[in-house]
Amino acid sequence: MNQQGCLFQKKNLSKFYTEVMVSQVYYKNKLKVLEKMVGIMGYYELKKGYSQIRLAELEMEVIRTLGLRERDVNLKQILLFKWRKNIVEIKVVQFLLKQINLRFKMSLKLNYIAGNPRANKILVAAKLANVDVASHLLEWKDLETPEFLAKNPLGKVPILETPEGILSESNAILQYVVRGTPLVGANEFQQAKVKQWLDFATGEIEPQLIQLLLPVLGHFPINPTQATQAHAELDWKFKVLEAHFANSKYLVGDQLTIADINLASYFQGIFQFLYGEDDRVKLVNIVRWYKQVSELPAFLDLFGRTRYTKKPFPALQFAGHHHGQAHGHEHHEKKEKKEKQPQQQQQKQEKPKKEEKPQKADEEEEEKPKKQVCEFDALPPSTFNIDDWKRQFLASKDQAAEFQHFWNVFDSQGWSIWIVKYIKAEGEGKVLISFRNNCNGFLQRADPHFKKWAFAIHGVYGDVPNLDISGAWIWRGTEVPQYLKDHPTFEYLQLTKLDATKPEDRALFEEYWTQQTEDESKVQGQTARALYYFR
Image (cartoon, rainbow, N blue to C red):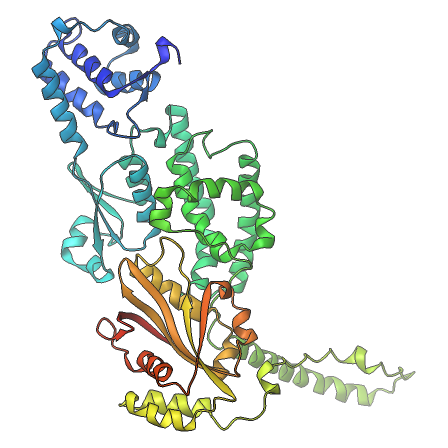
């Protein structure tokens, strides 16, 4: 930019504020002006990344904050005025900078539950704007306490505690934390566009995402009809975004804003669980935009690296869903038979003029569904009965003693024992609740038929911020089954086969099964945090 639109360093801005403060032409009360000037500085983080501010933005902010009209003062002329040391007292400058530094250290405390993506996007924006936000981690039970309900009667997180009061609703907090920085838009029009895209994500993306993503994560069973409608809604809205990013680097022009951070927080779940390789091929521009946002260090610190799924993850089905369908079909057939009986009696009384030729069997009857081929059916018979062992182990009060019996009956020719460990990405394993959901989701998405042939104790082990997911498994056969190879996250699994004849392998296997007290028991030196059975 030229002299009229240059970038000013922090020291020049300080001189400008001091010059305005001592200028008797426009202001009489120096103290009030000083307070307002410090207020302006509170809008800008000048310590690091935003030490330079465009002149046009600064002019409008000063005018707006001081309640001036543009004709009242020509700020450009003041900025271009040659600074004269004889009118600036060094004590005044030092006092002003001290007040500015105090403003920088303004206390902001974000209350949230670990792993909450709404809180994470706020923390990402704060990192990018170099704004200090203290974290106050809560548990679900804390949301029902009188202390928290006094802060937010709705009992929801996140909330932000500020010197001015308490803010709720994540988008409101997001805008407040980085107010006055380019992250909310460079001018009034861009600020309005940022709000437009925030509303777009909340109103047009989030409702459909809830219908599709939460069943995949195991929060509630999927409704097939609603899921189909939600997918169709997302598909055409993604076409709108795809067209937008064909001509724009970010949502609002060529500059990153909180609108991008907010929308990217939704797309992480979309690309990790819902939209596979075939879907992403149609979203080239969206993928390009998402990668440049999601690979920012601040985003990686809070959300971790995105693992793009090859194919959509299966969702949690209603309990007894298939049985319900079969029962409904049977009821429908009975009803049809009852309706056909009086019709057949009536047809017996009437003599048909001409007999119709019988149709071919393949035209009369629908093709019978083929029985699902199971790889384990082809294996030789085994003396080990997994169902008996499950019942015996789960019913026992002394599970450690049960393993003395287990090694006597275990058939290592027809079955095998394994340690299955999740290969976590950089940045994963820092938050217990999200890693717990990861572990539970892995088990929920496994083929339910596999449960007939397997038994496992699988869970989260370790301490924050270095958690791991692993488990001890028994399954039919001596190799990795196709059921597991077909799992959407198979490529992120480390499988170690144990030798049932080796004492050290037996000890490791037993340790997983016998150390099951959460937050107390240890397996390989790691504390058990959240444990699940696969059975």
